[in-house]
View: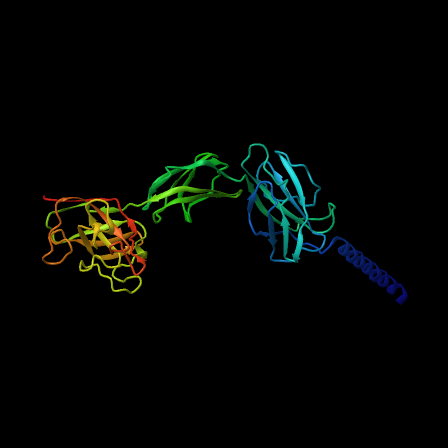
Length: 388
C-alpha cells in the first residue's frame, strides 16, 4: 500500500518539475513575460512627414529589454490599437503600412527611437495617424504587444514670398491678417516676433486668418508658423506702427481738467515720475524737459532736436499726473487753460493736435557725450481743442 501510494506522488512531482523547467526555458528564450500591453508616453506625439527625428518612449512598468522590437503601424483611417502580435514590414501605401525601427534600450522603462524616413504621407494627404508599437522577444509572431502610443505626422508648412496681408498694423494690435503658404492644418500656431497670433482659423491648406496681438512698435518682424510637421519662418514680414487711441479726442477751450484714457503699447517700461527706476522725474507740468517720460500735446510732428537749446517743434502742453494702468493703458489729465497745469501759464490755443508719448522729455542735444534723443513710443492720434 505504501509503495503504491508513493509512486504517483513521485510521478506528479517529476511532472510538475518538468513543466516548471519548460516554462522557465520558454521564458528565457522569449524575453521577460509581458502580462498586458501598457500605454507608452512619447517625448513628442507628432512630427514631420519623412521622419529622421528621434523620439523616446517611457512606461510606468518595465517593458523594454534586449531584443525589443518596434514598428510604426499605419492605416488609412485612425486605428486605436497595434496588432496583437509582431508582424513583418509591409510597404506603406494609401491604405496600410508597417515600418520597422531599431530602438536603443535606455532602461527597462525607456527607449529611444529614430523615426524611419518611410513614415511619410501618402498622395495628397497633409497629415496622418500612426501607432508606435513595441514587442518583446525575437522576430516571430509569438512576440505579443507590450507597449504602444499614438503618433501623427504632417507635411512641413511653407510660407509665400509675401506671406501676410496686411503687412503692417498699429502697435495696439487687434487687426485681422491673412497668411498664405502651404500645408496649413487645424491646430497650427503662429507668431509675429515672439508674440503669438490669436483667433487662428484655417481656411484651407494654403491660407489662415488670425488676430494680431499688441506689441511695441517695430519694423521687419519675423513671422513663424508651426504645425506637427515643423516650423516655417519668414524674416522681415511684418511691421508694427506707432499708434495710440485717445478717449476723449476733443476738449473745450480753457478747460481746467480733462482726463484722457490712452491705449497703446509699452507704457509699463516708461519712467514716469521715477515710477520705474526711482528717479526724480515729474509729470506735474513743472519739468516737461526732464529725462523722464511724458505725454505731450503737439501741433504737428514732435521734433526735439536742438534749436538753440530749445526743441525745434516741441510740446504745446503736457498731459499731467500720469497713471499707468497697464502696459497698454495710461491715464493723464490735460489742462487747456494752463498748458503745463501751472497758474499763469498761457492756455492751449484752439486747433488740432497730436497726443505724443515719449520716453525722454529733454532737448535732443549731445551733452557730455550723451545724446538725449527721445523715443516716441506711441503717436498718431489727433486731438482737438475747440470752443463749444
